[in-house]
Amino acid sequence: MPAADLKERRIAVIGGGPAGLMAAEVLSAAGERVEVFDAMPSVARKFLQAGRGGLNLTHSEAPDKFLSRYGSRREEVGRWLEQFGPQQLRDWAQSLGVETFVGSSGRVFPQEMKAAPLLRAWLHRLRAAGVIFHARHRWLGWDADATLRFATPAGETRVGADGTVLALGGGSWARLGSDGAWLPLLVARGVDVQALRPANCGFNVAWSEHLRQRFAGTPVKTISAAFVAPDGSLIKRDGEFLVTAHGVEGNLIYAFSAALRDAIEATGSATLQLDLAPGRKLQRLTDDLAHPRGRDSLSNHLRRRAGIDGVKAALLHECAAAEDMASPTRLATIIKSLPLRLASPRPIDEAISSAGGVDFAALDENLMLRALPGTFCAGEMLDWEAPTGGYLLTACFASGRAVGRGVLRWLDQVRSPAPR
Image (cartoon, rainbow, N blue to C red):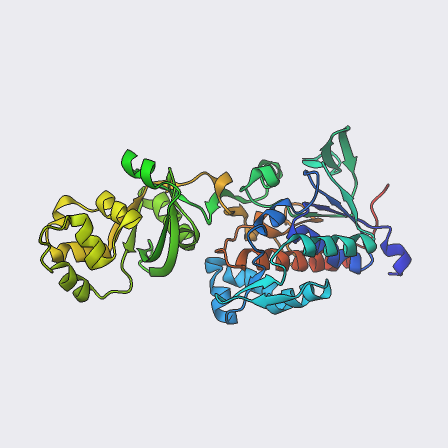
């Protein structure tokens, strides 16, 4: 098709996060007329928020291990990453003038540690390529003739498009635009969708009032945790977490969150085993605690002989039975494997991300909805999840790249512009 004819085709990208913007980049680079619609006053608000503490773009670990982070969706996500994986993402950032580096944990960050410079350079490139942005346009679905409907400050407007990319995010952080309001719109059109659930989330714990009053907001550092998943697999991680008024949250908890959430859904609760003294072997800890206390209180004895004080001591008293504190052997055992019972996940709007969304069976190889030809989906609104550490962002970028190419392949087949 001649280049002049390409601009006659109008592609609507709904959602201005990393997946939507990457789809817009691929399509505009191919000469398509691309318009991005976003419900918020500006695009990529969740992306900017995620970068406030240092934008973790991706991770440098080996490909097989990286791919394993996507669990049961590793095959589907792996197809995106084959074309646009961690190194390609770093190269892309460099093409925008943003250098990256690998931190001590293997995580990859921009040199400036911020999202804003990268986003500014990206939007400048997109606008230079002819991409048009429409802010404060909340998608309302379709009218009877499949025209897109949007609510705007000036009232409802309708937009005809030759192809539509939906990149509307999941159900977390609604104040930044990801509110899951799209889900019933797709269900009404016969699209198979899995319920949205919190991912990378905190959990509720039935704390005593004493612990809640004294230690809410306190980090618990230098510990290990273990959990036996419903399928029998053992998950172990080192790190730290935060005690909150409602329960627990933080990186160590997020690493277990999918397995914990699934266990709670299956059985009603989940118990995380905490090692409060990961640097000590059980026998050494038992011997240390067997040392005569003399006039020491139990609290002083724990502090001097086991390094357990403050919030760790509070957790020990909170979760251990009285008889566990009575003998050095039982006390050492419970310190090495303290059962923390989690009642339920925190609400999805507090979660860093969400699981569930459009079922992959509802999509063809181009990420087009089988029930709605010409409508494609990308990013977190698809039914996959990943832990924090750069895995979420990498897959969102890669899915946007994949869907952009999918739209182009489909357009090459249909080849006819929509009426204006």
